[in-house]
Amino acid sequence: MVDISVKNLTKFFVIGENLLEGLSFDIQEGECVAILGRNGCGKTTLLRILTGEMDYDDGEVFVNPNKRLGLISQIPVFPAGYTVEDVLRCAFTQLTNIKKKMEKLEQEMAQNATAGQLRLYDDLANQFQSGGGYETDVEVDKVCNGLGITPDQRLQEFDSLSGGEKTRVNLARLLLEKTDILLLDEPTNHLDLRSVEWLEGYINAFKGTVLTISHDRYFLDRVADRVIEIVDGHAEFYSGNYSFYIEEKQARFDLQMKQYEQEQAKLKQLGYTVERMKGWGINNRTLYRRAMSIQHRMERIKKTEKPKTERTMKASFAEKDFSGDMVFQTKNISKSFGDRELFRDVELLVEGGERIAIVGDNGTGKTTFLKCLLGEEDCTGKIRFGPTVKWGYLPQIIHFSHPERTLYDTMLYEKNCTPQTARDRLGAFMFQGEDVFKAVKTLSGGEQSRLRLCMLMDEKINMLVLDEPTNHLDIASREWVEAAIEEFEGVLLFVSHDRYFIEKFAERIWELKDGKIRDFRCGYAKYRSILEHEAAAQQTVLPAAKPKKDKPKGGTKDTDKLIRRLEREIEKQEQLIADLDVQIEAAAADYVELTRLLQEKETQETALLDLMEQWETAQQN
Image (cartoon, rainbow, N blue to C red):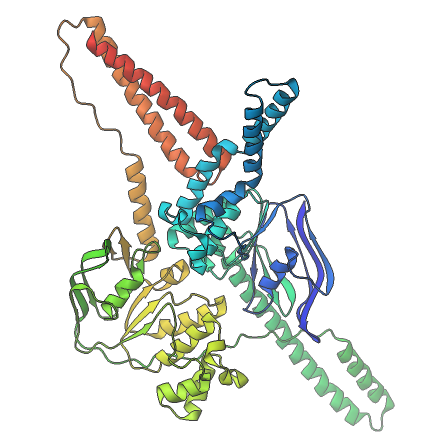
């Protein structure tokens, strides 16, 4: 069954310049499809058209009318004073209305219930139960835990949250609504690694249809069944995840280029033959007619278009020589904000050439740690840098001292370079033509990061410190940045939630958790393997052996047998409950299975209590 169908969709904002032109595709029920394309190609516009928020100029758009549709890029306006908890509970509006009707009927039936009231109440109760009314608290807790929405944050007013926090709460609300078709526009933005992994698990277990825009290549590899790329307003299709898309796109490019080159060689040869035969045919009409016949055949040949190559940045860091072994060392550094301790007694040593990723949940203090290291924040303890170390820093939030200046003037004034050098350096970072005369304040977040990186690469440094360097960048821009970093031979220290970026560069992982930095001298894949092994080991730990108790005085042989039998049954029951805990965690994204397991656990815990009571009674005999 088709859930979404788009036929010859056309959308323009400037007459004569179409953003989407003849776009056509179908999405089947249950598919997870990734929409790719450069920034500004119309991806978000397409989602807004699908929801009906934006009109289009031509074509047909079909969305299954029997399915509930949700778009995560929209953040609804809620009444003043609404807390995060209130926003989350909006997902259960229908159930809440049913419950209110049930409560009203209960009051009316308190004195004298009619048959009609009883039937209505029974019908409402069935609707409430079948709709999951008794599991709403479990569902809210599960989604909040997965997306890192803390109990304290659930009490905050929604309007007081940052844009990223509002996006995360709105994503939680959308997931709780049990939407049939999910439209996700950059869903991993503002999520930490743990939350992104939870979201991946949720999407993979989701029975509905998902259409997602994302620049997170690791995320796309984990969830996408196929890829639709928007190129020059139309769709190109790839029947696999992001890695498949990359390989297939290159294979198609190579094939098209080969066909183009073969055709050009053939046309060149035919052209040469035509010119010669025309010369010979001046006095020979037969040769001349043959020449014209070949020329007409050349015109009828269906010519392959020359494949376009992406413009690339040609930039590298101006590196400073490094001498010595130690880059920097920390001794007992600690940082707190009031009663909140971010990290304590951190001791680390970094030597030349290392590439280190700092990972951890949002709010653990990763950015603050970088600022302490670079002297932008005060902390206790000692930080010592090597004498020849010169660092460059790309912060998460970019600030320019004169945002009203153009890119061109910014380079002239802040880098003190010649006009030609300014144009050359900006051009290397894809700021070309009239783009260089834009005001810095009009740039997108990704463009500002690219400009700051352009300025940073001019400095002679041997230590590069990056805080979320791929935020706001499309995939092509991320690859450009990665290509420049790959050439850098100095020390690389970065904070990132981009697992593709971490896996590509990190040779050492610092995990900031519970106020401590744990040092893993390995890459990302090995780091994840270690964590998974540790988690599995914790789950399989057997219950501690029960201490032997002295036999009660006057106990009989039959009583001793009963006690030993009950102890064996208690151990089995405890193990059964432990196994259920493992299954409950694994089924966190499947509310039907989760509900069944929770009910089973409650039954088994009741049986355990019964065995414990029998054991206590036997001990007293």
